[in-house]
Image (cartoon, rainbow, N blue to C red; front, side, top):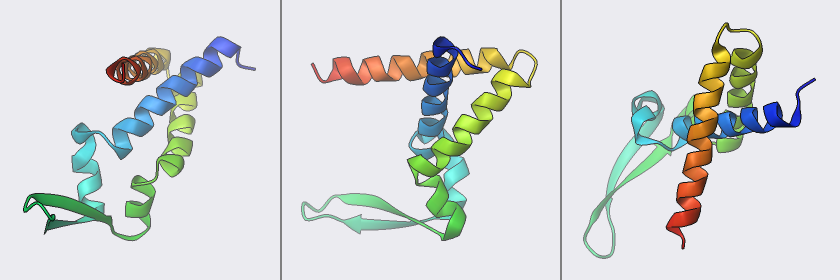
Length: 108
């Protein structure tokens, strides 16, 4: 059974991995084949990109709840099975905590 510390650690790591896959620019290469990109002009005359998911995988990659389940399983796998996988979990957990602190302080 996991301790409370391990549970929180895995939760933060899963949060960060989910955010990487669903939202962050660095993983756009992974999402782009499963999205249709439309350029639209808004009321101010500025062009904006609108990304529409294509098919089952596109819908899944745009859903934080769907990706979150897989991210949690991946983090648990790395933490329990992969030798030195706990280091990846720790790095992602620290990055997740850092992003939460940044978002919180950015609102002040």
